[in-house]
Amino acid sequence: MYIALISAECAPIAKAGGLGDFVLGLARELVRCGETVEIVLPYYDVLDIAPLADLQVVYEQLRVPFHNEWITCRVFGGKLTEVNCLFIDPQSVHGLFQRRRIYGEQDDAERFAFFARAVLEFMLQSGRQPDILHCNDWQTGLIPVLLYEVYQALGMNRTRVCYTLHNLGYQGRVSETILRQVGLDPQRVMTADRLRDSQDGRLANLLQGGIVYSNFVNTVSPRYAWEIQHTEQGMGLQPLLNTYAHKFGGVLNGIDEEIWNPELDPLIPTNFGVETLPRKALNRQALRSRLGLQTVDKPIMAIVTRLDYQKGVDLIAHGIHDTLAHGGQIVLLGTALDPAIAAQFAQLKQDTAANPDCHLELGYDETLAHLIYAGADLMLIPSRYEPCGLTQMIAMKYGVVPVVRRAGGLADTVFDANYSDQPFELRNGYVFDELTAAGLESALRRALGLWHGYPEYFWQLRVNGMRSDLSWRRPAQRYLAIYAQLRATV
Ligand SMILES: Nc1ncnc2c1ncn2[C@@H]1O[C@H](COP(=O)(O)OP(=O)(O)O[C@H]2O[C@H](CO)[C@@H](O)[C@H](O)[C@H]2O)[C@@H](O)[C@H]1O
Image 1: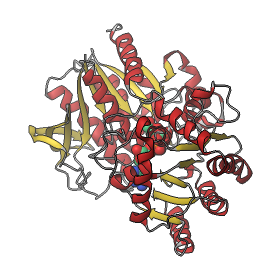
Image 2: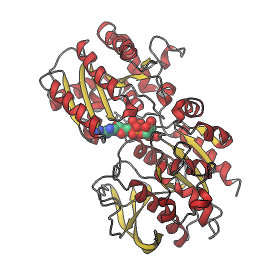
Image 3: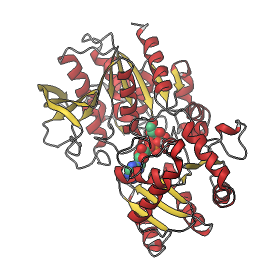
Image 4: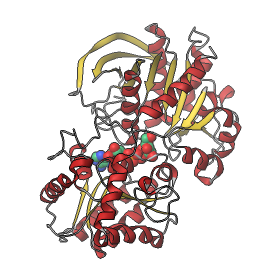
């Protein structure tokens, strides 16, 4: 099967968060299963080309219609380990992907709408007919719309679309001008059952368009799939997701165990596994020295995250204070796009600067993230909503016990040490329900108490997490079954 994975991110070359991990992890597993995979991304100026082999121009003079003009693009090809990647590089006066970052620009909608049109134009002009276009999030929502409305009539009628929703908090609600720019007729597609936004009828909703026009839609955990159909977590899309329940499901993500594996990880000072778990202490020490924390008999509570409303930033701040007050150390690595959140954490960093048990690192740092997973004992994830969540899974692989809110994929992967109905060997963390300070404290203090009072039991929780199967093997089989079902309709 020939699968094109279309995305705004891919780890480690263009990663802002979990979407990047998803794309690389799934692609690599599909290649291992013998499938032909191409990842298609914009050619960002911030693309880290170092891990790419054989990077070269593979297509010149790709002319893409956009907003009454033709934009000429080059397409680069390269290999990221065993996976082929393609990069669309528009020669436009607006420097669409020359912004020193992946997202956060005022014209993001226009940038990714252009990308959507360019991907299909490239497929058409280069004679590609993928069996499956696997699109992700709002940035690629126009691809199934354009395929159906424009490109099928031009001959691309064997291709089917699988569309994965990683985050309903970002739906791509945009002016209908964008539709005209990519060559769609707003009169035709701006209807309630197509792209017209249900909350603001003047806007087009690109995520909604992707859901309506794709052959199959999924999100990244069974629990989040249920939540967005049946609770306000659907953020306005509940009726639509119920209408399309027959082509909707939840597939839990995996993690790439070649990248996230404490036994092999080249980015950590000391490798370790279940049998050599005491060696984790050397990483804890390295983490303390790197960040200037004192050496004391306290567990390290880590937080590695985008600092975003979704992640429960107020509870993160509360959790920092509560951990410090109850015998723990704190290490936070976080990026904030929102200026108010950035200011809140800059202040918190200043307020805790003199505390030898606390270090807040505001920024994005892949290498430090690996050291944190290797050295930490606990990880705090108090999300408001969490489609899947990779940090709890990575944490568990590194013998870190997660403390999480019962939401989305966190509920599907973390089982409470005291209250879960799972057998003991599957219990791997601490879970709370209420999105309140008291809710968080109930789990956090049990976790800290266990570390201080019952080290053998805490050790067992670490081991349970390390032994769980969080790989891409099972999820990739689920996607292959979905693709096969879609191909059967050709
Ligand atoms: N400051 C920083 N420095 C270095 N590394 C950092 C970092 N901040 C985050 N990371 C890394 O980025 C990834 C984040 O994973 P999450 O699952 O939390 O993703 P996110 O919410 O971005 O993605 C969305 O998509 C994913 C994939 O489907 C879903 O799991 C998730 O629920 C959904 O919100 C992890 O690999 C983490 O280590």
